[in-house]
Every structure is written in C-alpha cells, then in structure tokens.
Image (cartoon, rainbow, N blue to C red; front, top):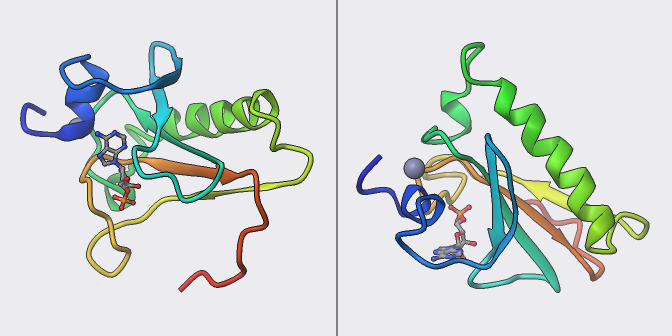
Length: 114
Ligand code: AMP
Ligand code: ZN
C-alpha cells in the first residue's frame, strides 16, 4: 500500500532498525520504546489491522507468533516473560493502519490492560 508507513519501512523506503526478516514477516525496533525490549512484528503483505484477519490471510499470524517466540529467546526476555499486543481501531488506539504486534519485555509490565 503506497501511503502506508509500515509498507514503506518493509520496502526500505523509510529506515528502521531491523531485527528479523523472512519471506512473510518483518520485525523492527519501535521508534518510541515503552520497555527495554520493544519490537514490532508485521506481515509483509498489507493487512490494515486485526479486524481484517481472514482465513485467506491468517497464515502469517502464526508466522508472526513463531517469530515472537524466537525473538523473545534471542533478545533474552523469554525466561522472565513478555507481552504481545495488537491494537485495533480507534478504541484500541491503533495509530498505524498496518497490522502489527508489539513484543514488549525486559521489565516488569503492569497488569493494567485498559
Ligand atoms: P499502534 O499505536 O499500536 O498503532 O503502534 C504503532 C507503533 O509504531 C508505535 O508504538 C510507534 O512508536 C511506532 N512507530 C511509529 N513510527 C515508527 C517508525 N518510523 N519506526 C518504528 N516504529 C514506529
Ligand atoms: Zn502497509
């Protein structure tokens, strides 16, 4: 999608700090980290958000969770624990309309999900 920030990052048109890439998935450091480890994991194909996941495009979601588990180990947060979050739509405070999963860890996160 030509006017999508994360599509531009995936295409290399906007710089990012890449932590992983394969045929389906791109992962990079969040520009405004909320925890010592804050990585965004996104599908390379544009999906606008969690409400647009279907039986046709959902295979990449399992790839993203495989990536999250592996990165959590590599980044040293698997043992103490971490959080995976996706925000969707206005009430979910989604600011970038390309499906992304936040991988957060490296400190004690709060239980407040609201
Ligand atoms: P959300 O608010 O769930 O849509 O998350 C969007 C995330 O993208 C935020 O945590 C931002 O800090 C992050 N973000 C925005 N622009 C960039 C960028 N150019 N590089 C890396 N992360 C970004
Ligand atoms: Zn996109």
